[in-house]
Every structure is written in C-alpha cells, then in structure tokens.
Length: 425
Image (tube, helix red, strand yellow):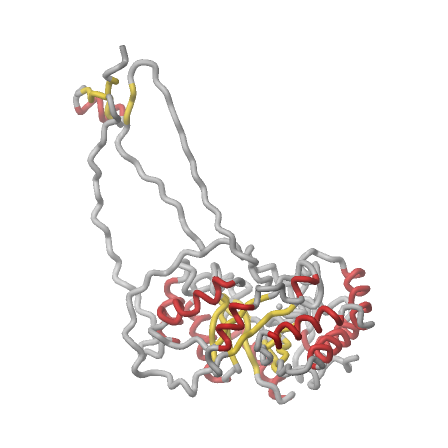
C-alpha cells in the first residue's frame, strides 16, 4: 500500500451575496457543516501445498496521505492497572503521519490508550527522487530524537528501492532499472542513507526495504524480473551493512495473498533478511478473516514460511479497508498477533484504515482501544445513542432594517421574515 504522502490540509469557503433594490428579504439563521476527515538470489521458495492460482490484482488502497482524518472523541479510559501483561504483548505503534507530526501524535495516541506505551514509531521515505531515498536533511531528526529517548523503543523506516517509485513505470523499464541496480549504479544512495542513520544515532533502525514487492503499484516491484530483484535487494542490504556502526534489521514485507506474483518467488534469502513481514488490510470485499488466514499466500502461509526460515514475523501495515467498520477483522488480527507474537506491528491510522484518527470506524476503534489499553473488557460495547436537544436560535435582524409583521401565514408561505431598510429612501 502506498503511504499517503503526505498530509496537507484542505478546506472550503463558500460565500453567496444578493442585493435587492428597495426591500431586503432576511431568512432565519442557518448553519453550514463540513466533515473533517483528517513498502543473486536462489530459486523461488514454494510453500508446501500452496497453489499458485492467480487472483485478481489488488486495487490501490491508499488515498493520498493528505487529508487529516476526523478524530474519534471517546470516553476517557481509566489508568491501566491490569490486563495484558507488558512482557506478553508485542511491540506496537501506528503510522500517524510521515513527517514530524507523526512523532508528535505518538504521545496523544498513548493517552487515548489509557497511558499504554507505544514502543514503535513508523514512517516512510518518499520515493519521488533519489535525494528523498537518501533521507533528506532534517527529515529523520525528530524520529531519531524520539528513538533515542528510550532504549526499549523501535524505529521502523520504509525505504523504496527505486526513485519515481509511484510513477507507473512500465515493466520493460523496471527490468532495465533492476539490471542497473544489480550492477551497482545506485549503491551510493543507500550508502548515504545508512551513514545518515548512523550519524543520527539510530543504527538499529528496522528497514522495510521494497515493501509490497509482489504487487503492481511500485517501481520497486518484483514481478517483471524476480531473479534480478532478489540480486538487487541483496546488493542494497550488503551496501548498507558495510557502513561502520550500523546494526540495521531488514524487514522483507509482501502483501497478503498472491497479488501480481507469489511472494515466495521474491524471497532473496536468509542471509539478507532479518524479519519476514506482511502488510494485511481487510480486503477484498466480502472476504472473512478466516479466509484471509487460509487463502493461498495468506496469514497462515506467512507464519509457516517465517518459521521454516527461522525468522520473526511483523505486520508493518495493517488495518480496515474494503469491509468498513469490521469488528470481526479487528478482533481476528489482534487475536492473531497475540497468538503469533510478531516482533512488532503498526496499524495504518488514517481513514479508511485507522482507529484513532478515523471517526468512520467507531466499533473497531473501540475494540482496538479496549484490547491495547490493557483493559479487561475487549468486547466492544455499543454506546447509548444520545439525541441532542435542538437549539432554535433567535433571529438577528440586519443593521438598519425594520422587521415587517405581515402575519404568520405569510411568513410560513414565504419561509422567512421580511424587513424594510430604514434608509431605503
């Protein structure tokens, strides 16, 4: 899924004016409302018993990461005193914004969760040009400061493998770019990024390199040339690992399901992969959570593959999507992660996927909040509807205007009151 890069705010202002020659018609007060809505190898590694039947390509699922989603206004949580023990729970966090605002919102999300500590911060490097992939000057500073404040924290950084990463580059050009990458033409960009991360004192950053490579969205996709893709991945990892002082962990993260190519065909090998992740959104429409577990190249295949390779799992991107405010999916994912103990997970927290910054998912949001706040009431409770008492404002006459009392039946017929300007003559 394309990270929604990268959140500017939009607004609308409408103004209508009217002029009358000798009398002014003034209607009763009205109101306007607007809705705020704030990712040389060996042969492919097949999964036992997993068919390679194609499935429909995954539709792009990230709206431009620009609108600020509407915030949920939940009831306050009591301080955490019991529930899921900290030592059992995987490290978790959320994608909250790709810039410094994302760092600022971590404490606010923690507060919403009743003081539960978020141990993971997650952002993306833009893939528009190579200078962005190098980690622009100043961009990573706030994230590095947050990471350095506590030794138990984790910084997760999605790193594109190609510039023009979302520009719809055709397959033949992708093949040519992969050959250039394998030849070492792009090494210096990744060396510079590694040096910058070490300089910022975040040498243990988790690098989600070339995420969702089994799909069709990105220029860093694997499908056009899997063998050279794997060689290129290895070259990038070895280039970054050669920088003195680094302790990076590389997270290889496909989409759940088959997508454009079976993700096993893109696995570059155990020597350059530290974590086997999976991006998992609630899609396609009508697919139950149990089906998401059992589908070819689904959640069960993912944990089985990681176990066979001796790697921990992660879920760098997950969240609601095609099936709306789906409590079954939310409960399924939280139970699944509690059972399989990923190294970390970070929900994508903006509409339509999120829970805190998206008011469109109140039931799933309540469940997420109940479970991850450590409370003992994980079952969502539907709030009692509150019907607000309507407020009928007192009409306000324009200046220099005398109201005309023409009787109730005329005013009902007109739908408004009339007034006569005092200076009309």
